[in-house]
Amino acid sequence: MRKLGLYIHVPFCKSKCAYCDFYSLAGAEERMDDYADALIAQLEAFAPRAAARVVDTVYVGGGTPSYLGAARLVRILQAVRGLYAVAPDAEITAEANPDSVGGWFAELRAAGYNRVSLGAQSFDNALLRAVGRVHTAEQAADAVKVLRRAGFENVSLDLIYGLPGETAQSWRESVERAAELLPEHMSCYGLKVEPGTPLCSRRDLPFPDDDAQAERYLRAVDALSRRGYRQYEVSNFAKPGYESRHNLKYWTLGEYLGFGAGAHSDFDGERFAWARDLGAFVRRDWARSESSAISPRERAREWLMLGLRTSDGVPLSEYAARFGRAFDAGFLSQCVKAGYAAADGGRVSLTARGFLVSNQIIARALELSE
Image (cartoon, rainbow, N blue to C red):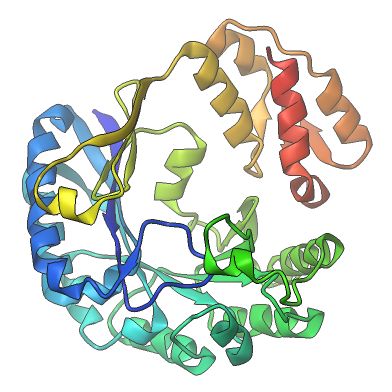
């Protein structure tokens, strides 16, 4: 049977972070039960289309899924298990904020959740306050301990570098404090100030410049490598065997179905997304904000673009065989000579230095794939 990932979006948050442009809402707690009902109805509506597939990953993201509480999260997963063919060893992830982690996570573990992605973001309390995070560094450390006591053996920590006011020392300490908690997985994302977010209007804040961000990134790569974490994607690091199986679907063109307001899907040759509208979703008015068939040309570009974001890179010999299109590898050969990429048996992958300028490299490679 073909494998399928499920993504379930939870748009509720205790407060909205200053940098966030995901679909999330603060102050809408009274809609949580209605939203859970609508999610389950949507899961039921799509189940027949997925009957020939086995679900091997489930990812409940947000927003702040942990804000929903145990009863709703357990109910949603029970619905998934009742409606879809879920593999016995499926990776089932819930995102959480440190301030909303408690002993009740033992109920999630008993229900079948086996991975938690914790949004620590920084271990500097001043930086957390500057971007509107409602937890403290101490709560993040305590949350990991609570998750361990609840039985979770697969914990991921998210960090963000490039926060306003961040220094080289504060970033180094955040990486060290996160690694000392011994998570199986870590993600280190560079801050991207998105239009329309509160942070976008605060250019007066002391943001680290591009060179400083590059230094932060390379420092994290080195520090995590020395601690046994393998960088398997631009921003993601894992102990052996703990790579995020769900996120790998995105980077290897696996199929996934998204549920909930604002969720995206890549399913049965089509890409679509649900409108970012909580009220409409709760009313079961599941309008698509976008929908399109994926052309062979677009799929070829995605294969190249996403593959170059991973440490495994792309086997160029497969490009013509898989997509029936020629590819001029001369540019990537130049990247190898310059130290931005590495070649091994016809497979080309970017180095840590290459990942720093991956957008430019990938853009040029895509031009040459036309």
